[in-house]
Image (cartoon, rainbow, N blue to C red; front, side):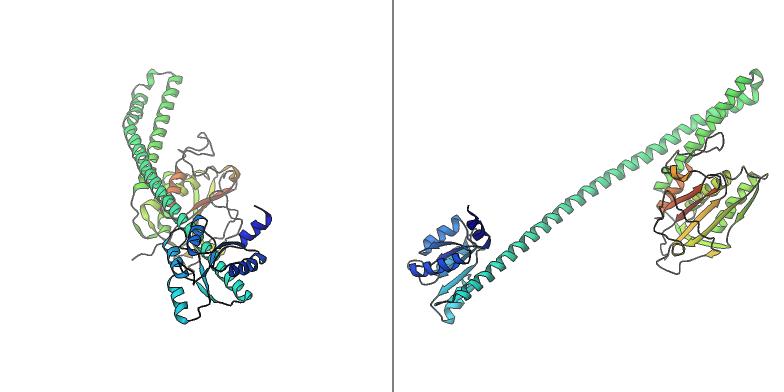
Length: 425
């Protein structure tokens, strides 16, 4: 195809149908000069054959023709699926209103009277070709949207299927974890119970090395038992239904702190806490989370003669900055707010925190801080199972919140958490 034919094809492919050779010649010359690709048919039957073999972009159709007039040609075009969408402009010397109405009734889109003006013919052709182009673009867009919707539906179905599969797998893993932990507890309990009997009744038969081995068995069995208990708690948290109530967090933290003081009366510890902080949460779950956080604060501060633990809350609008990175590091150390019992500003969220001034850790290496069994200090320095922060994270996530930390080596740590705020009925 030559460059001229390509250009003409882009402008439009037009079929002219007229039984008068002079009319065909005039229209052909007029349209060709304007850059259109023109085809000609001298009667209705040839026009139908040409349109069906290679559908044009538009048809200029004379009405008064022998054998098959323009009305019949148009009717047949509109009954054929290959040609039904081709716009037909009638060109005729018939100027009666009846003729025009009949032309539109059989499917014509426009009507030009003879003798015609070149400018009128070109303008009406351009108008109809523009309409057709916009129609094709609209149809293409509709098809794309339909395909997109189908793809989205298929994607959603696939996601739902995968979600159900993952839910089933998670339930199986949770059940397996709980069952495994439960089944291991009984024989493990027997191990450290028998170890206690050996230490109490048969230690005199052992030399010092034997006693050390026995102590190591006892320590290992008890630590394994603690790990299994933590795993059972972690599994249970995922399945437990939340019982949302208004909870006095100050009372919970004070109770946890007093238990630690009773357990470690030799420690000179102080709790800094406001008079009232309330939250809508599951009290049992949040008590577990706070127990881990406060106990950690105590544990990692206990090497000092005197130490302080803080619990407080503040509003996000008082401190949010663009460089905050949750779950890993939070460089902001916000001031302690005396009392927060409700959120006055709907755009603000309450952030709770537990702070200590103990050994801290390197926050730059804390990417897996909330992963199970992740520890930053050895057992020789600080005992633990590495499950506490995983439990905290799961509880906070069950409440629709987030948990993150800020810490510096030998300068302490602050653990922050937020909770969603459901409305109680």
